[in-house]
Amino acid sequence: MQLTLHTDYALRVLIYLAMHPGQRVTITDLSSFFKISRNHLVKVVHELGLKGFVHSVRGKNGGLSLSKPADQIRVGEVVRAMEVHFHIVECFNPQKQGVCPIQPQCSLTALLGRANEQFLRELDEAFLSDVLLRG
Image 1 (cartoon, rainbow, N blue to C red):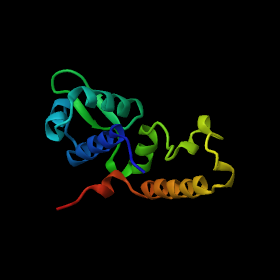
Image 2 (tube, rainbow, N blue to C red):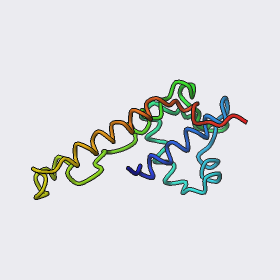
Image 3 (cartoon, one colour):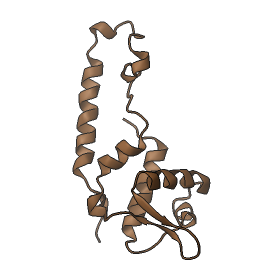
Image 4 (cartoon, one colour):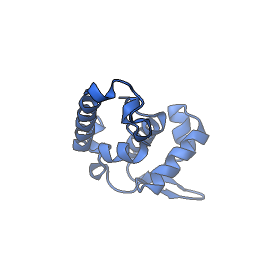
Protein backbone atom coordinates (compact mmCIF):
# COMPACT_ATOMS: atom_id res chain seq x y z
CA MET A 1 0.00 0.00 0.00
CA GLN A 2 1.18 3.48 -0.76
CA LEU A 3 -0.14 6.60 0.93
CA THR A 4 -0.78 9.71 -1.13
CA LEU A 5 1.66 12.62 -0.94
CA HIS A 6 -1.16 14.57 0.70
CA THR A 7 -1.24 12.14 3.62
CA ASP A 8 2.55 11.92 3.73
CA TYR A 9 2.79 15.71 4.02
CA ALA A 10 0.03 15.77 6.62
CA LEU A 11 1.94 13.32 8.79
CA ARG A 12 5.16 15.31 8.33
CA VAL A 13 3.42 18.54 9.36
CA LEU A 14 1.94 16.93 12.47
CA ILE A 15 5.27 15.38 13.46
CA TYR A 16 7.04 18.72 13.00
CA LEU A 17 4.42 20.46 15.14
CA ALA A 18 4.80 17.74 17.77
CA MET A 19 8.55 18.38 17.75
CA HIS A 20 7.84 22.04 18.56
CA PRO A 21 5.25 21.94 21.35
CA GLY A 22 4.05 25.28 22.62
CA GLN A 23 5.30 27.07 19.50
CA ARG A 24 3.42 28.41 16.52
CA VAL A 25 4.91 27.28 13.25
CA THR A 26 4.21 29.03 9.95
CA ILE A 27 3.53 27.36 6.64
CA THR A 28 6.60 29.18 5.33
CA ASP A 29 8.68 27.53 8.07
CA LEU A 30 7.30 24.12 7.09
CA SER A 31 7.80 24.75 3.38
CA SER A 32 11.42 25.76 3.91
CA PHE A 33 12.18 22.91 6.28
CA PHE A 34 10.68 20.18 4.10
CA LYS A 35 11.44 21.86 0.75
CA ILE A 36 7.82 21.37 -0.27
CA SER A 37 5.66 23.77 -2.26
CA ARG A 38 4.04 26.33 0.02
CA ASN A 39 0.84 26.18 -2.05
CA HIS A 40 0.63 22.42 -1.59
CA LEU A 41 1.19 22.76 2.17
CA VAL A 42 -1.58 25.36 2.40
CA LYS A 43 -4.03 22.73 1.10
CA VAL A 44 -2.70 20.06 3.46
CA VAL A 45 -2.78 22.35 6.49
CA HIS A 46 -6.25 23.60 5.60
CA GLU A 47 -7.56 20.02 5.59
CA LEU A 48 -5.73 19.23 8.83
CA GLY A 49 -7.51 22.21 10.36
CA LEU A 50 -10.91 21.14 9.03
CA LYS A 51 -10.36 17.64 10.43
CA GLY A 52 -9.41 19.06 13.83
CA PHE A 53 -5.74 18.09 13.97
CA VAL A 54 -4.25 21.59 13.92
CA HIS A 55 -5.17 24.97 15.28
CA SER A 56 -4.19 28.05 13.29
CA VAL A 57 -3.83 31.64 14.38
CA ARG A 58 -3.76 34.36 11.74
CA GLY A 59 -1.80 37.57 11.73
CA LYS A 60 1.39 38.71 13.37
CA ASN A 61 2.75 36.03 15.72
CA GLY A 62 0.31 33.60 14.11
CA GLY A 63 0.98 30.09 12.99
CA LEU A 64 0.03 26.50 13.50
CA SER A 65 0.02 24.21 16.48
CA LEU A 66 -1.43 20.82 17.29
CA SER A 67 -5.06 21.02 18.38
CA LYS A 68 -4.40 18.42 21.09
CA PRO A 69 -1.31 16.76 22.58
CA ALA A 70 0.66 14.39 20.37
CA ASP A 71 -0.10 11.52 22.73
CA GLN A 72 -3.79 11.93 21.90
CA ILE A 73 -3.50 11.86 18.10
CA ARG A 74 -3.53 8.37 16.59
CA VAL A 75 -1.58 7.90 13.37
CA GLY A 76 -4.35 5.67 11.99
CA GLU A 77 -6.92 8.40 12.62
CA VAL A 78 -4.83 10.85 10.59
CA VAL A 79 -4.32 8.41 7.72
CA ARG A 80 -8.02 7.54 7.57
CA ALA A 81 -8.96 11.24 7.64
CA MET A 82 -6.56 12.27 4.91
CA GLU A 83 -6.81 9.37 2.45
CA VAL A 84 -9.64 9.60 -0.07
CA HIS A 85 -10.01 5.81 -0.37
CA PHE A 86 -8.13 2.58 0.15
CA HIS A 87 -8.62 0.99 -3.27
CA ILE A 88 -5.41 -1.02 -3.30
CA VAL A 89 -6.42 -2.74 -6.52
CA GLU A 90 -9.12 -2.01 -9.06
CA CYS A 91 -11.62 -4.50 -7.64
CA PHE A 92 -11.72 -2.59 -4.31
CA ASN A 93 -13.46 0.23 -6.11
CA PRO A 94 -17.25 -0.34 -5.93
CA GLN A 95 -17.62 1.32 -9.32
CA LYS A 96 -15.30 -1.28 -10.84
CA GLN A 97 -16.98 -4.37 -9.31
CA GLY A 98 -17.48 -7.05 -11.92
CA VAL A 99 -15.03 -5.50 -14.40
CA CYS A 100 -12.33 -8.13 -13.84
CA PRO A 101 -13.20 -11.41 -15.58
CA ILE A 102 -11.54 -13.58 -12.91
CA GLN A 103 -13.19 -11.81 -9.96
CA PRO A 104 -15.81 -14.54 -9.36
CA GLN A 105 -13.05 -17.10 -8.76
CA CYS A 106 -10.41 -14.84 -7.17
CA SER A 107 -9.86 -14.34 -3.46
CA LEU A 108 -7.09 -11.76 -3.85
CA THR A 109 -9.52 -8.98 -2.94
CA ALA A 110 -10.31 -10.65 0.38
CA LEU A 111 -6.63 -11.26 1.13
CA LEU A 112 -5.67 -7.68 0.35
CA GLY A 113 -8.66 -6.43 2.32
CA ARG A 114 -7.48 -8.31 5.41
CA ALA A 115 -3.92 -7.03 4.91
CA ASN A 116 -5.21 -3.46 4.56
CA GLU A 117 -7.23 -3.78 7.77
CA GLN A 118 -4.16 -5.12 9.60
CA PHE A 119 -2.12 -2.19 8.24
CA LEU A 120 -4.68 0.29 9.58
CA ARG A 121 -4.98 -1.53 12.92
CA GLU A 122 -1.21 -1.22 13.34
CA LEU A 123 -1.40 2.52 12.64
CA ASP A 124 -4.29 2.81 15.11
CA GLU A 125 -2.00 1.45 17.84
CA ALA A 126 0.48 4.33 17.40
CA PHE A 127 0.09 7.85 18.64
CA LEU A 128 1.88 10.81 17.07
CA SER A 129 4.10 10.95 20.17
CA ASP A 130 5.21 7.35 19.49
CA VAL A 131 6.87 8.28 16.20
CA LEU A 132 9.05 10.99 17.73
CA LEU A 133 12.56 9.85 18.55
CA ARG A 134 13.68 11.16 21.90
CA GLY A 135 17.37 11.94 21.98
